[in-house]
Image (cartoon, rainbow, N blue to C red):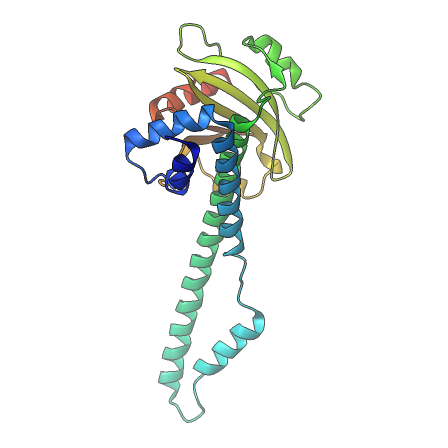
Length: 251
């Protein structure tokens, strides 16, 4: 199959809507084809930009006043009716505020997920995916000293199926962090670490949050010792979870 045939189904692949066997074939092709991996990164970025742009509208104060005026009771209405309408309006406003708060929080999380996926895809598409190339954690960890404003531990991989390929700098929400690349059975997994207090919406994440259902990647994120960890890749969910457990134990 030539690249034109692959690219014809690229959007379906990125939406996670291909059959499982086709998804595995696509994963393998994207990893070894610079053209398709670059096109995948571009489309992921476009999808994220469209998603963010679609959520920018916020009702103005003038719009709120007009709505309140349109439902305000007339003077001849009874006190009981006015009280009922006022109570109903209050309920609507409270429910609306709670829904808006939830949507803002979810929108922020979805945007972070998209940016994490972008960082992972961009790394796969890069001709130089890591700045420090080493399988030795005692070489990779010191490389970040002075480059990021925090320290973190790397797990011991002896007697596991994981291998460390290296690391690079990464930025999320204008926050510098560490981007580590691991390999398990020819699948690349990104582990990104950021200082949580510098990130927006940090309090809304909760613990052990998993990736969205429509994501083409498996992902897990958690907070530990003031740091926010993201583990993402096309490996199966068990591998993602096992690598996350190694990091949790090391920290």
